[in-house]
Length: 305
Ligand code: MTE
Image (tube, rainbow, N blue to C red; front, side, top):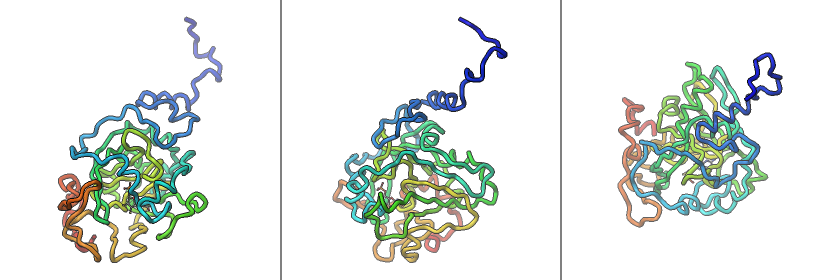
């Protein structure tokens, strides 16, 4: 084997940064293709996904339930429309800008997001404000991992999310102002349960479920879980949220699942799991109270709904 001394090594022979980053991704358990030229398409198998201790042991819904009964108003307002109208949605190339009150704002490609941390499978209950619930094996890692990369300043007290909108690709968008926006308090955003989600059922997300990257907040109503994120901004005041702009008396900023706080037009005390006929009692914080109740100590949950 020929051993070269540093002085003999031409610049062109030194491993470029991109290759080195590729290797790191590989070591983290991802195929180099994630950082290479190959487009990340929906339904790509995600390797080396670890099981999360945060998972519920409840029965998982079928892939069909989760991918054909969706709310994604950019692709139509009926539950069966997103799986039809989101077909062919272009999710590559894709970047997420993480910006605002932080020391190191920057854009992340979806491949960089995929490679930032080991991916975990988290089987979460997910409760929609419309009283249906599902159990899904989501794949991702805690949003805090991404936010720490940009070093939020002490002035960052809220996080604002903005999602993709392109009328050409989304001709059936209706019912809301677009782009869809959402927000969290900083401590909610940094909570370990708050999942930056890139896959489900061992694969990358289908377009109708929010490809290529969405949030999942298992203790909040489903509309807080924004799909197809393009911007995450650290801010110092409560950010606007799409459903609150639409009907502020019906949809508050916090939107924590709470069986004792009714929606003005219906009770939230019960829910129906997709695929079942019976109603089940809804649990405070969707059953995640042990982990998240302390975030709301001393707050009147009827006032801050
Ligand atoms: N994100 C965007 N961009 N657009 C939407 O219309 N709908 C929300 C949320 N995220 C929505 C969105 C609502 S109302 C719900 S209940 C959940 O997505 C549904 O997620 P699911 O289809 O994966 O169950």
